[in-house]
Image 1: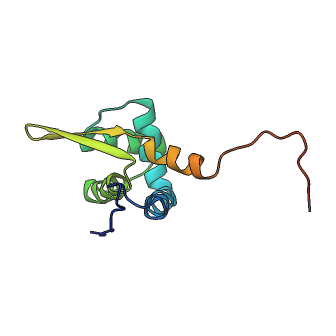
Image 2 (image 1 turned 90 degrees about the vertical axis):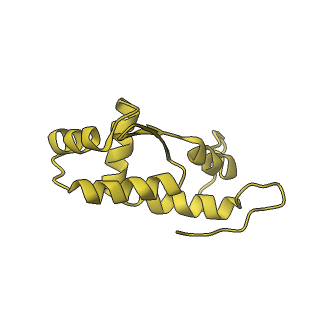
Length: 114
């Protein structure tokens, strides 16, 4: 597990957060998992595997999807809660806001091209 030094404010440095988010988003299977959670939040591993197979044609093992979920959780893109033997997963877009805050989208009509 990746260990990062927290800033004096107690927050992780923005560079580490952004780097983890980009790494997590680089994989098409992880993007499909996020798409599924966007469509229907609070799913278990079993539910996600079934939806990924039927909707996206992904035949990944539960172990592989579980590893993808771990990367997404470490990047802060999903949160989890255990209820008995089940673990539920929710989409968390806060790390994406950190990226857009760092590089805000501008809508200038006076854009110049090099």
